[in-house]
View: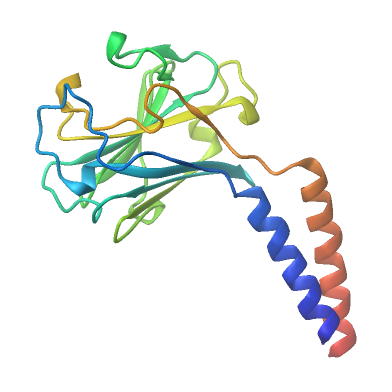
Length: 206
């Protein structure tokens, strides 16, 4: 019984290690060109992106409850290898070739600029809880355009609409992208060995 508990804790540690990277963004750092209302739910304070078992997990935390301001849209821009700076001088370091667009209470879609496709996600793919937003996206919807998954980079920006760049409230990070966390092969191997051990331990206690 003790062995099983210790093994479970170790496996939990491996799982957490694989999804640990989170970037922080200063509170209140709205873009000077933003013409919308500067509300807390349009202010990013942290963002994360990870990939495991064929699924991307994109997360964001904001200074206020997600979607509490009508018309707010949340966009994760992903560079899969063919990313370009689509905002010009406003954010020349933010490169992307696809986006995941979340309109709270309405829809979440994946737009692939390279393939020219827009794919709606099931409502269950998006979780909003207070100040936090989390989206699960199948890897098949974000295929490589030159990078391995471990080379993909991401930026998160909330908007007051989808008409023009003056509606972008914040970039996280400010003028760059951050990396997608992918489990190391050794972590995956340990997880596999650990699961076998856990199953064996459970069988012995039955």
